[in-house]
Amino acid sequence: MKLLILIRADASQSIGSGHIMRCLTFAERLLVRGGEVVFVCRDLPGNLSEYIRSQGFEVHLLPLDEACDLALRRPEQVWSKTRSEADAEQTMGVLKKYGRRIDWLIVDHYGIDHHWQSLLRGGVGHTLVIDDLANRRHDCDVLLDQNYYHNAADRYHGLVPKDCSLFLGPQYLLLRNEFYKAREDMKIRTGEVYNILVFYGGADATNETEKCLTGLMDYLGSTIEIHVVTGQSNPNKDRIKDICTSRRNLSYHCQVSNIAELMNKADLAFGAGGATTWERCFLGLPSVVTVTAENQMETTQAVSELGAIWNLGWYEKVNVNALVKVAERFLMEPNKLEGMQKKALDLVGVRGSSGIEQLVEAISQRRVN
Image 1 (cartoon, rainbow, N blue to C red):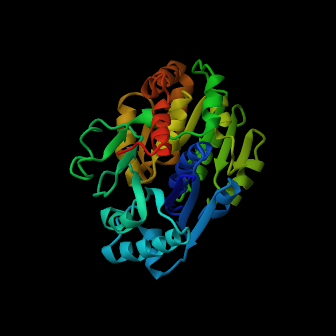
Image 2: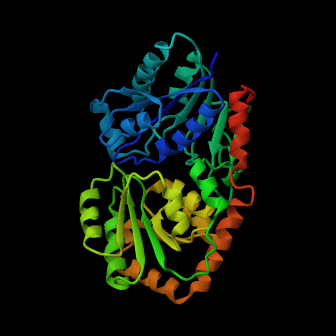
């Protein structure tokens, strides 16, 4: 009988697309090993259900109700006990449709903690949590945090059961196959800038993309090729597309499947913290990072202190002038970008994300715990 895996994660214009995208990467790896993977998502504005289906996975949508307003306003806030119970009950309703025990439940959601997970325990064999906040308790068998922190080994002390298996650090990166293919032919950068990538995540709720374009267009003119990427859930995508069509050296891309190729061609990137930080580091792409969510702060600062990225700080304090100044700095001092490339590659290491293969193999063989 096939391994049955259920993933509970959400995407929306306020939550962004990161949780879903990294879960899709996980799902693809499990599918290759013979697993059957289904998603359970809340029907929030800007959800990626159609995109998930286009990748070949079944999606069960939970209804949008008044209680979902918190998820739209405060996506990083842990749910109340009442909210957890309601969501858990609806998710259990999906589980019952399969008529058998779910082998693995994978949860990637900031609102969910041990209350919700405990309610699902009876219907699943094992629970795996993907997290990077370390701000709440979990009732799980495995916890995965692919980010870099100075105190990674201590962050989850007291937050998970004593027998929980921890997989911590960039060696467990969840990367799509396109990144491995791109790394085989990875660009060797000299620090000179001819091609810039602008990508602030799928939703970019704070509209950093337009801010960045305003600064780059004013400073760079038409001398450097700029590729601009947005997600389908970006509320400003039409205006950004119009901006790009007005300049010959600007190319617009929406909900792409070749982001690794675009990263590999670029000499410098402007983007947000979060999962794409690791994608850029994996390909040695120097990047100027704006923190657009609280959960990005700690790891962005830690990676910046290593010299693997340039941290511009909290988005509200980043203006067009700051973006122009940093662009000018790197264009005038190419050796700084060359050094950043080396630091980024050192951080992920020659092993890349081989560690995640060990975890996927263990899950597929039911050998974790």
